Length: 217
Image 1 (tube, rainbow, N blue to C red):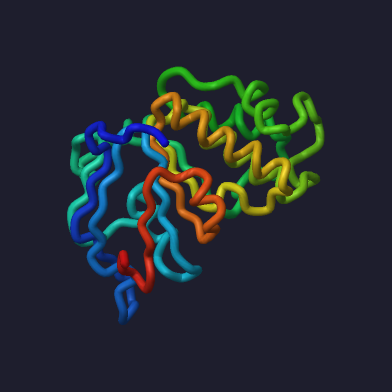
Image 2 (cartoon, rainbow, N blue to C red):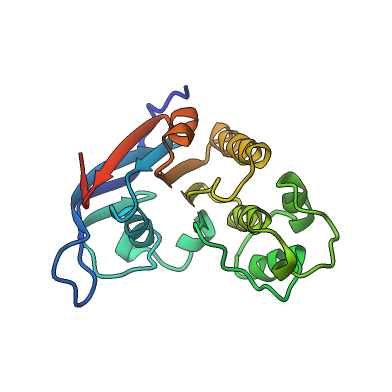
């Protein structure tokens, strides 16, 4: 277990959200904080609001109520440099399927200012064939998900958002992904891990929050 006595890198107070046109709030006043270098598990059943929370914290969804401070600044006041400091791995692959794995990463690395990882090294680390000329469309779901994990590390993020990162993986590759998460945390990366898999949470997380019907229980 890591020493997570460092200062909070993310502080959330009274976070609430209702989708436009919705009658009931999806999130109902969440309070939590995550410390630097911590693997923080955000657990709950499907439909509990986990992915919505991640989308709010990564600024994909606007219009929340409450206070969110990340890297010592209000989330709403962060500029585009915010995306140079975070990595985001979505549960469902969203890749350019006509490109190869390395072509996908080469394309995405162009969005970042500053140094990035080498695509060939990332795909090798995640057991995606280096130099493979097949398009991503020809890859398995598990390989696509590992490529999404690789993409989320391109910019060497200090805060890493992961949504069900072992989904679709066979046991061997699930271990590979979990080991990578541990390595990143050991190197100082803060990890926000959303999952409904209790085994993954138990193996990886320093602390967890349980989300049920939009509330932390």
